[in-house]
Image (cartoon, rainbow, N blue to C red; front, side, top):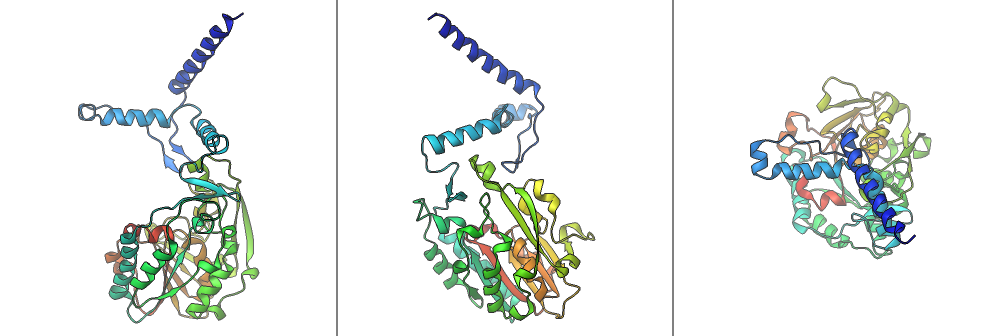
Length: 367
């Protein structure tokens, strides 16, 4: 009887070993990991140069890791073992607080913060003189939870002091008091559009457009489920799926939306079909776009807005369209600032710089 137990262990070991090997050899390679929001390594083609430089072996190793059978399930098991059983504080730098997945941001980068402020100052001097220019910063989720849940964070107060003192000729609008952790998706870094009433009201008051905006309650809610945010795949933790709510009204339904990257094509404000894509948040204004415009055919004003933004601006911009004839969104991560004059006519528009703390703390992402 005692001899059977070691033999059974050996048999099980070889079954598992050969089972994974056969699965690796026989199963088709996956092209994408939707949970991790990235392309997976494909079988590299050997060349004399790549073999001699060891690049081929590195690519082959990454290929084996990416195409391993049951990879997603094993990642989830490992993450839950480390987080729930071994009580590690995070998984891949992401922790849970009141059911919300939060990425730790622990290192303040003063030179990046100053670079971001200087980029705004340079844009003002180049394109925006004599315009009404505003700037606001969106706190990340770690700002609300790090201290209470004893996780690492940088000094947000120092960051904002560095940033605002460096700005010139730009009116800063403080949004930190307008938000709480519940205003963000559980599974994602972004804020929820339906929770942006206080943010919109604060900006509208500072910019003098509050009388041109309807109450947020007057919009029609459209719900999509499930929305799986980026932290689900990055952390492999058991995170509750979100409902993605987007708000519509007659102005947004009739808006004329165009992207500089898709010249001649008319888009919609919202793209519900992108919920199941690589990033479900792309529902808002079709995701990453260098320059995209929204025109309001029902406008009672000729005033326009230029919004320099990151991805957070995709969900806020539609809520400002009622106040303008046209809103132009510019993402400087995808278009160099010296070429803006080729795409945008700068006249007497209102201008809003709206960036998350993650972008401010990584200012060199702005070109």
